[in-house]
Length: 111
Image (cartoon, rainbow, N blue to C red; front, side, top):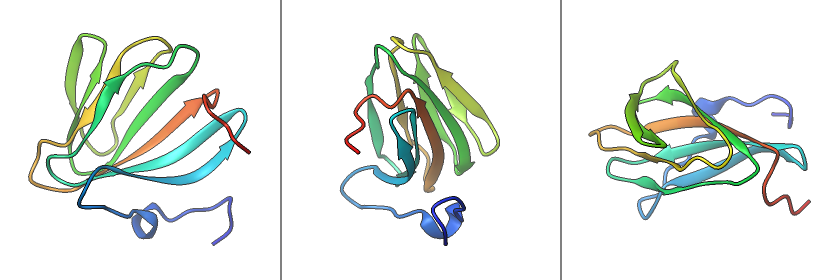
Protein backbone atom coordinates (compact mmCIF):
# COMPACT_ATOMS: atom_id res chain seq x y z
CA UNK A 1 0.00 0.00 0.00
CA UNK A 2 1.24 3.53 -0.67
CA UNK A 3 2.22 5.98 2.04
CA UNK A 4 -0.94 7.98 1.28
CA UNK A 5 -3.50 5.18 1.73
CA UNK A 6 -3.79 2.85 4.73
CA UNK A 7 -6.07 0.00 5.71
CA UNK A 8 -6.20 0.47 9.48
CA UNK A 9 -7.68 -3.02 9.97
CA UNK A 10 -4.59 -4.74 8.57
CA UNK A 11 -2.12 -2.13 9.87
CA UNK A 12 -3.13 -2.44 13.53
CA UNK A 13 -0.54 -4.36 15.56
CA UNK A 14 -0.98 -5.17 19.24
CA UNK A 15 1.76 -5.86 21.77
CA UNK A 16 1.29 -7.78 25.04
CA UNK A 17 3.69 -5.56 27.04
CA UNK A 18 2.21 -2.10 26.41
CA UNK A 19 0.07 0.01 24.11
CA UNK A 20 1.50 -0.10 20.60
CA UNK A 21 1.76 2.95 18.36
CA UNK A 22 1.80 2.36 14.60
CA UNK A 23 2.87 5.44 12.66
CA UNK A 24 0.88 6.05 9.47
CA UNK A 25 2.29 9.46 8.55
CA UNK A 26 4.48 12.18 9.99
CA UNK A 27 5.90 15.51 8.91
CA UNK A 28 7.12 18.59 10.79
CA UNK A 29 3.47 19.77 10.75
CA UNK A 30 1.70 16.69 12.19
CA UNK A 31 1.66 12.97 12.85
CA UNK A 32 -1.03 10.34 12.41
CA UNK A 33 -0.77 7.08 14.39
CA UNK A 34 -2.84 4.06 15.27
CA UNK A 35 -2.89 3.40 19.01
CA UNK A 36 -3.50 -0.32 19.58
CA UNK A 37 -4.52 -1.23 23.13
CA UNK A 38 -5.02 -4.69 24.56
CA UNK A 39 -7.42 -4.93 27.52
CA UNK A 40 -5.88 -3.21 30.56
CA UNK A 41 -3.35 -1.16 28.59
CA UNK A 42 -3.09 2.61 28.82
CA UNK A 43 -1.34 5.73 27.65
CA UNK A 44 -0.27 7.56 30.79
CA UNK A 45 -1.71 10.99 31.45
CA UNK A 46 0.46 13.74 29.98
CA UNK A 47 0.24 17.11 28.19
CA UNK A 48 1.83 18.80 25.19
CA UNK A 49 2.44 22.51 25.61
CA UNK A 50 2.18 23.47 21.93
CA UNK A 51 0.28 20.66 20.18
CA UNK A 52 -3.36 19.63 19.90
CA UNK A 53 -4.27 15.91 19.81
CA UNK A 54 -7.33 14.20 18.36
CA UNK A 55 -8.41 10.67 19.30
CA UNK A 56 -10.87 8.92 16.95
CA UNK A 57 -12.30 5.58 18.05
CA UNK A 58 -12.03 2.85 15.41
CA UNK A 59 -12.63 -0.41 17.28
CA UNK A 60 -13.49 -1.37 20.85
CA UNK A 61 -14.16 1.09 23.63
CA UNK A 62 -11.66 2.79 25.90
CA UNK A 63 -11.79 5.68 28.32
CA UNK A 64 -10.19 8.99 27.37
CA UNK A 65 -9.21 11.57 29.94
CA UNK A 66 -9.08 15.19 28.84
CA UNK A 67 -8.50 17.62 31.67
CA UNK A 68 -10.84 16.77 34.55
CA UNK A 69 -13.21 14.68 32.39
CA UNK A 70 -12.97 10.98 31.60
CA UNK A 71 -15.45 9.48 29.13
CA UNK A 72 -15.79 6.30 27.09
CA UNK A 73 -14.72 6.64 23.46
CA UNK A 74 -16.54 4.27 21.11
CA UNK A 75 -16.04 3.63 17.39
CA UNK A 76 -16.99 6.71 15.40
CA UNK A 77 -16.48 9.11 18.31
CA UNK A 78 -13.80 11.80 18.59
CA UNK A 79 -12.12 13.40 21.61
CA UNK A 80 -9.95 16.53 21.33
CA UNK A 81 -7.12 17.39 23.74
CA UNK A 82 -6.12 21.05 23.26
CA UNK A 83 -2.49 22.06 23.80
CA UNK A 84 -1.52 22.23 27.47
CA UNK A 85 -4.42 20.05 28.70
CA UNK A 86 -3.63 16.75 30.45
CA UNK A 87 -4.90 13.72 28.52
CA UNK A 88 -4.53 9.95 28.32
CA UNK A 89 -6.36 6.74 27.36
CA UNK A 90 -7.14 3.50 29.19
CA UNK A 91 -8.64 0.34 27.74
CA UNK A 92 -10.49 -1.00 30.75
CA UNK A 93 -12.73 -3.21 28.60
CA UNK A 94 -12.36 -6.92 27.82
CA UNK A 95 -11.74 -6.26 24.09
CA UNK A 96 -8.96 -4.72 22.04
CA UNK A 97 -9.31 -1.03 21.19
CA UNK A 98 -7.86 0.85 18.23
CA UNK A 99 -7.69 4.64 17.98
CA UNK A 100 -6.67 6.88 15.09
CA UNK A 101 -4.60 9.68 16.65
CA UNK A 102 -3.61 12.93 14.95
CA UNK A 103 -1.40 15.58 16.56
CA UNK A 104 -0.36 18.97 15.23
CA UNK A 105 2.09 20.44 15.18
CA UNK A 106 4.35 17.41 15.55
CA UNK A 107 6.05 17.86 18.94
CA UNK A 108 9.19 15.77 18.28
CA UNK A 109 9.70 15.49 14.52
CA UNK A 110 13.04 13.81 13.81
CA UNK A 111 12.76 13.64 10.00
